[in-house]
Image 1 (cartoon, rainbow, N blue to C red):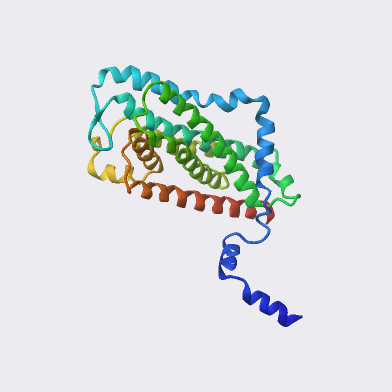
Image 2 (cartoon, rainbow, N blue to C red):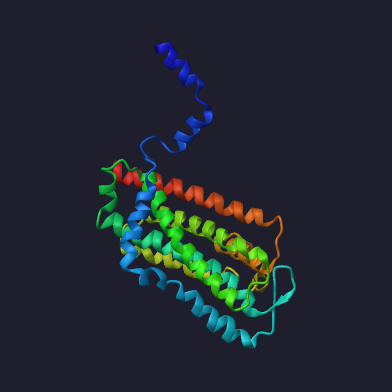
Length: 281
């Protein structure tokens, strides 16, 4: 019998051992969908709060893209060709809406459930593990960010700000962007001690929104600051959205996508491990 078990252990692929070193047994019970279902039921009666965040980028588009944009003749697009200021700003606001919808859901809501109503402590008495909680919360934040992005894309289409069929890929890319921001946001939330720490969230999100080429091109910055901006996550998201909505698509986009894939994977694993440490130790 012992020899049979030894042979079975030797037959296991090495990848399984590597997987469980990254996600140890007990962290994941394959029930993350239950947390998403719970969030949907809870928000069913608070739908206005859920969709209210979608109006902020629309107000920016109408006031800056259309209002202030009347005083700007044109802006250089991703391929150097001149485009209208509204067409320049709209894809950036699309990326920002995905970021905002995901980050604020994965930080404020998660902190309240974790610190005050002790929801996750109750969940861990069920077959769910910390990885289920992390994936479930990140998935719900992703859906919220995707909802904001879909609504904004519909407005862009109605205003004639989409110039290429490649824009069909903007929504799945927005979901990847939302996933990455939600994962990092939730991982950061596990290190927060009080509501005062959320000033740090605003300190990170607001400069990203204002200075990641949202309202003006990268060329306006000094050379050293261009290098800093080009490493920020929202900059990569904006480059993807501008390229897709304007039809400027190249192999360089794979680098932007890889950036968010790594960000999402690292954020999810860190969030799950931190939850396991805080809730199980």
